[in-house]
Length: 623
Image (tube, rainbow, N blue to C red; front, side, top):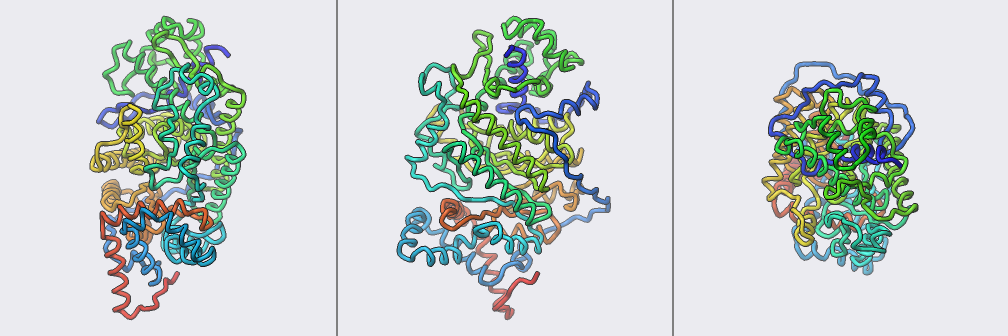
């Protein structure tokens, strides 16, 4: 394949990377009119650069909301009668018991061993009965699609929707997990010649961090076994999407990229994206623009062509065609996001893994050798992603792509953006996840919004604080690269509110952005409500969603739902024995959550006392 196709593919790939991008403190909204015609834009958006697929029929646009005067809405999160209207007294008692047990260090630290012992002593039937009366009943909706329907329908009756999440995981030992990770993240070329390739250590697999469950308490983890298992996991996600479509009118479903293919590709593609970002910085520095904010770095086209020719990246005629052939550079400048439209051929996925060597000025493969099977594995991963997006579209379900570790995340975000560019043309179907404990979270959000604005598709985001903090910090320190995490919880809170405020300003600006505020932090929810009141943004517009985990923070979810706000519970489901790893993490997460705040337990007691004193001993929710 020619250098033209190599560079075109890689430059496009680079535009999706947003690591270490700096954005001006001011709102970085585009003021430059596109030089393309509407037809050219539509033609550009027909294909998907990385995720190949044929055209599909889009579901209809959400009906317009009538403009009516909006009264400021105040939610009383201390009103226990409203918060627990959907719960019977037995459910309140169960919550109190489970939350109390989560504060006992010994029980939490040894929860896995204690559950195994209970199973042996009680037998399988009695063990499952006990779990359904306690931890399983609190945090898991049921064993399969049918058994979860009553809970989903009850929550819907009280204004709370569902994000279905099949939470079955392998119960691997640490040694088994490490072996699987090393086998799936190390290429054949690296196995034959470990030091032959100039890989960045952050984007290489390291055995001491091979068990990605270490230090992670609130995110499920997938380990690659083979392509057949990835196909099975894709089918599980498809069933979950169909169940979401059948269970609710406007549901969500969650997926993880590491479940859909060999993580070697995510590592390598992430490294390529980062190196091409560094290449853009190098070219900007050559034009004296390194101190500018990223979207202000408009490279002079003629100087750029001369630089690429001098570096030996390609022949002068080829370089000329890269820009004029795609009708780029009509304004005489190129910025980071303009590079998106340079791609025109990705028939060989391994061509995405070419990187510029700044010392020699030439394009070089990230790996010295790339096997045909590795090529097929990468293609199949991209095909699975595309299949899931199509099913979400066909079933009227929004698809949330979970964030993962920072050494995978550039590739995950890039692939998610590709899905958004293709499937979010009429309404938000694909949602990307932004982890606000990362130092570059705000930069990631602002650049992706700018891309959606220029290309005219609906931006969909889920904001979380993050699930991998301890693991990320330990890995950065041990291996020797910059810690990607904010210095403290207060900094993460500020980052969360900053990102949230920016997206909400974009909603006010264009009504084409959408956000899921996924948090258990009551102050953040109140902050969001204040912003909505200031903007005059009605909850019925369905632009701002709220999300909490099933079994936690009902005093936030249900008052919001009953006030008309779109709020969702993450609803895990699966057989008792197979969701034990999930339940183990919930216990660990709740230990810190409950020790840090007695609020939820005190509210539960308050409501239970109110009912008992009021003669509602046998209270059952009516819906």
